[in-house]
Image 1 (spheres, rainbow, N blue to C red):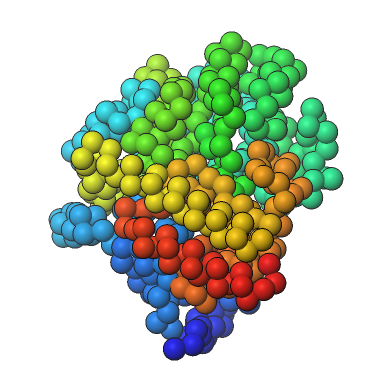
Image 2 (cartoon, protein in one colour):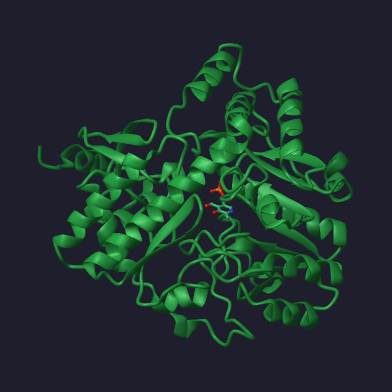
Length: 442
Ligand SMILES: Cc1ncc(COP(=O)(O)O)c(C=O)c1O
């Protein structure tokens, strides 16, 4: 049967009459998908099906929210069991205590836990807490790091022409949106990542002003860029030396790289860490964790953090079921995620070298991205902006759809492995890639 997306096209035309740009986030619309996106109807394990009945092997996994794959039976059952007794009480519940205890046991430095709904909310609350605790107004954010859509973070979070970025000693601040609070641009100090000297310079020139250094531990919104050896430990030392907090945003890496995230994997304990995506196994659950002395700043609304939906019973039921699965067999799940992720990257790199394609699959264990570049590796945001052909990648991802492989069409995002992915899935993907590349144009 030949590939067609007629029903998706019709749905999109209908959507345009009701939904702005036909959807609920620009990243799911024409900005990434061309004329119209495919409409997905259902998922099971590693696969999803669209409205026209096309089946795809899904490497996107809801932006990384599904380490167990789609509709994992334990998660589905947990949701059903809890839903029949009421979905949300906005009152104290035992499951809230139980999941917080699980997080304390899993995550380094998680002396206290606070639940929120999304990664954006968690990082917003963490920054407010850092400002409240230190009494300082500014924070350091890195070029190319994405922490959600709140004003303070929407500075240099998107790829830009490299010529607009200025000197790395004094990056030109680029607002990623209209309508931002202007103080956001002033109080967010932007620094190139993977360069310890740059952080030291920024701390020196804003002495006594920096509440926190906020970093993704693995850069996961410009493809996948690992921290240079010792870099995160260096950030830890610099923060402590300057009386600033270190906040690691593990929204992407949490419950994916290791049970205790990058703090465990790289052996660096932050003052605060933020989680989202994989924590809720597909439901909106996020958390801020960290040192009790700092986290207690939330007490009695001293540093205010509210939320009708915080710690929703149904979300936490999914989280509890998922965390139990992730901790099975002494880390066997994470060994699987790493093995499949590394096999995928290696398999694709073999295809690229055999077909003479100027591309690399670059990643860390369970996360990887295909980068069209002549460089052997991409180390930071500026290299990503200068040397990665994002348009070519988008064409590739859309061509792969026709061969049953679903990867994000945005070069800035990445692919992830899940419990549901197998070695056969890796071979299938490499085969699809070979076919697409042999059709030419890349
Ligand atoms: C590192 C990081 N932090 C925060 C966020 C925001 O999370 P959410 O989309 O749940 O608000 C994202 C989303 O992609 C992210 O990648």
